[in-house]
Image (tube, rainbow, N blue to C red; front, side, top):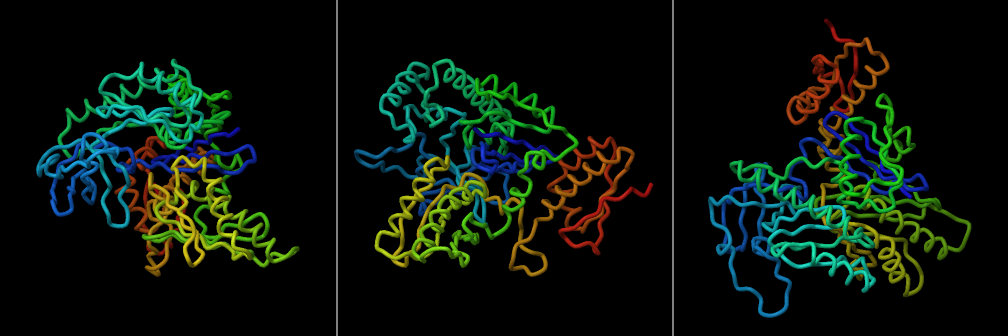
Length: 485
């Protein structure tokens, strides 16, 4: 059984799932300025239609226009079979048109978000597809009798113009649970339509879904024993939402002390901090080196000079440990796109095949449904994983301001960490009137992208927070000191 741990700070919520063994299973960061993530719905404006590409560019208020390809511009998904459609992008959108679109893949590396016009509303058990009828059951539900039961049950609950995707978490769910979720998803869809009718493009219209509900929607809530939250307001809202969903875990929602780091109390702070390291140690003495680039993520498996047995046995043991840890790191770091694994060479022709099978087995429960492509002629193991959210590294890190080639903690990440320290200092010394001294890049980031977080912090303090830009302080450092008043 797993425990969900929710750490709420101004501008940022961090959520971790911890297994019975005390190790992290899932992790995510949600920030105030994160609109444009997978699942967000926008009322956009078609900027340009490009017939040669059979695509259009749609303005959604982001730095770069979103990309709408022909298959995603169609009102219903083409499922194959029969003659392929002969439509063109111009049959579905025209320049200047206001269109309701949803983000399929977040913007990154200079590319705009990938969009679709087939908006869906995701819940814990189902994905409601308004205007796109049909019931599609997750392949992870393998029992034919259960698949047929769910189809029969849902066919009586959906309206004529509605469809749904049945998620693996719906296995065993009853009519009351599914009806409750359908009602909730219909209400969210009505909210989206209502917001769209009131707005002028570009505008985000998908509303404010709480971070913890987003996390459970993306990663599932099966096996949860309890949820620990360090913010009383968040805890109360979450408990109410989960009761409505009939998804409250057996241990309920537990309030952790506000004036302490809940990650430290739960013994996962060090493991969370290690997610920014390229080096990952394996139980048997080996290691992984994870390197992310714009085009590909590489994972190098090393034995670490371990002994105590024949070389072939050491290689096999290290590789099997590596497959388990790689699958885990994919989820924790939200690695996506093409992932290439250089595992330790093994004797015998069946070695690569064993690694493919081992990796498929441990990836079977990943909600992102990665695909193991197999091994190349050079012996590298290739995997693709859908990009549902930005990789953890791009949320926290940025190009190093000193060397310009490496990566360093982004100014906004430093700013959020500094606000966290301010809170800790005030909790420890209630009479303190704090000031935050940091590099100008950090203070500027807080006043710009982090303004909402800064406002929330000042609300908690009951007074303005003095920000002191100081070129003498390194970009990744800061000081909390008494304000000069």
